[in-house]
Length: 160
Image 1 (cartoon, one colour):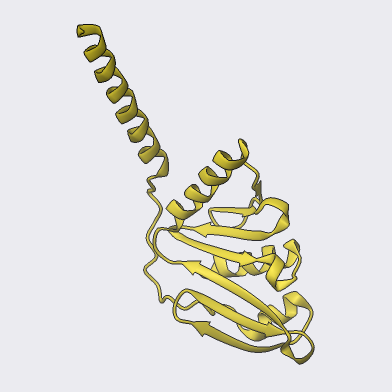
Image 2 (tube, rainbow, N blue to C red):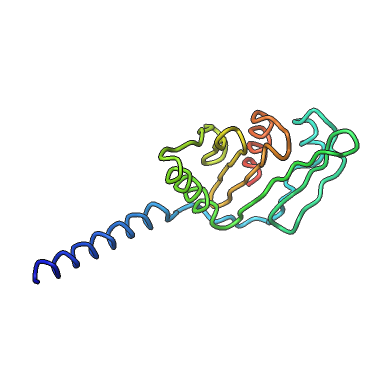
């Protein structure tokens, strides 16, 4: 009976230890963002120059996203989403979730942009973090290249 009770305490201890390790991995010491929370940091002209197409409109959706309409008749849309607080945690969580699902890290690191930047699995998106701000660009919906997303993310990182 004593060994069963001891075994239960040991299992509880190991679970607590693993939970603590996970919370340490997920915690962040990233610098909080203190600037204006404007998701349309780039002008229509800047985004148009990167896309090599005119941007017809630029509209913020609250403080969390900016929508750029481009292409013939402004029929294409580029959404840039911001996580202004907790971005470092969100980035770590995305990695941990993909690693848990696939059994490996499937993000491709892109050095030199912000504090960290990644191309999502299958080239489906681009994520960049600077300090505690995470920026996400959905490449499939926008129909833009990873190269264009890198240039846009680099310009945003320079302004954060």
